[in-house]
Image: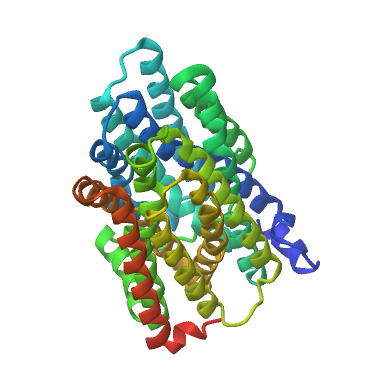
Length: 412
């Protein structure tokens, strides 16, 4: 890595993809996130339509897929600061490949049932939990500081591209080859991802005293707690994870089936439209990474997204949801890139793995709890009402932080 870094220092780099190792990471992330999005979508589709389950069973399955993040991600973050990043990436992705291949085999044998789905969801969640922190932590280690926001925006673009491609392709594969096609596509993508990352070079890991997990976690927590700006950014991340993110990504799928009387697999088209909106604003942020007052722009984007989610809950037709999801995507592109970029730009590189693990713990680890709670609430007051309430709660919290914390509003 040192030779390439010296070369880069003497040349003007147009964007982060000019760094070959970052490009390999970006391609691998694109493929990996394709599978991650496909998994969440496929589990809900399989439970709701394949097994004829309800929103409570769907919420439990998504909970089992995501809950390992809450228990493992901090240990994974400590590993990301200690172990070669390429090795950790390959091992975690290989484990995920084994789990997805086992799911496909059970489908082919006709032995896959709801209990097996729960077990395999947990195993899949474990594999993803070990691989996620290092993916985020490597970004600022592979690119110059001035390209960090550009690299984060490109990573968000990879995520949205995977959302645009994954759900529709998985839906097509499922329509053509039933659920065997759904998981067969994931197996192929994971194999391609391993081939891409095989030649990636990552920085040497600095020798440091190994401490207990609680001590490693405490150092990341101290860094966040000591900075009011980071505290607010993490608070808003938590609110979004428990409310609007879960409502859009999980509860909406049940709304399509229960209230709009459509195939829950039609959620694929809404996710693709939303991803298109995210891609548009991610490109804008990528090109204008040096914009001022990013904190205020991030908060306003979250306000817009929260208000749109409140409207989504009361939508009475699939056609109305299409433009709402596109608008949600436009707001989401700004939210995703700026939240992560602002956190990373205010974090020392030797803490990056652990802070990114905390970031993922809040972002992804809280979502299964939200899915479980919203699934229960939806059975009592209806999916649409739950979605609307989530949007209103998120809107109130973000307005409060915007008015009450000018240091965050003015954050560059």
